[in-house]
Length: 260
Image 1 (cartoon, rainbow, N blue to C red):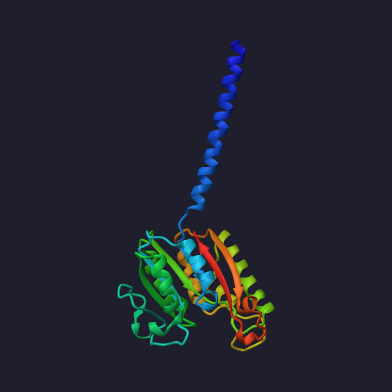
Image 2 (cartoon, rainbow, N blue to C red; image 1 turned 120 degrees about the vertical axis):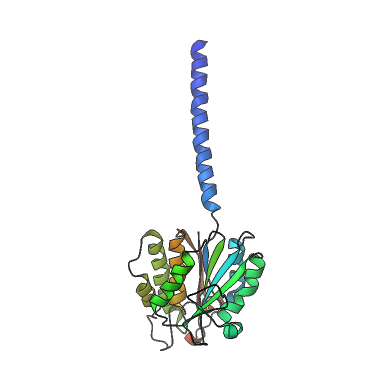
């Protein structure tokens, strides 16, 4: 009888140990899955409005107090390389005149107001070929702030004016760079990203592999500073893959990426 009691106690102890281990695994998994989003790459091409809505829904939070929205300055409006409407930023010039005309900003405003209802929007537009030191000055200012309740969104469309098979090749290079970046530090990410933006095809001299490498660089550097390199490439789409068009001049591709 005593031996049976001992065996029973041993079995209960083993069961208790297994149960505790299982609960720890579940707890760790739950914590990982519930990490809040710190950033995202979301297009400004309303052909993919439904997919934009889906990603915004995934990263939505009423706890966020600020959304930094970074966009290309598509038409090079204004005098300065980096422009904003936020008077608190010392390394971006306040030039509000053209923001309503910049679709890289305007198409996101409704999404942000609905999915981050308590957040202030800080819009930033960056001209192509802005020098790295100008961007780094702004990055230093931003990353010195408390960004615990901030989400950074880079408003970027990817391959333009190119055949779909080339667009896929361009986008695969970018996605692989992101995967590598999530695991390792990059020694020269600014120039690496500028190279990623170069189209590998020949359909048009105006074709690019992303429309704002500067915005891409800013986002990834802020994510590094926030230790938010846990990324998910949610999906890749394009005008051609959605509508079946064959004309490269009508093709634009899109990457949807979230960072935690």
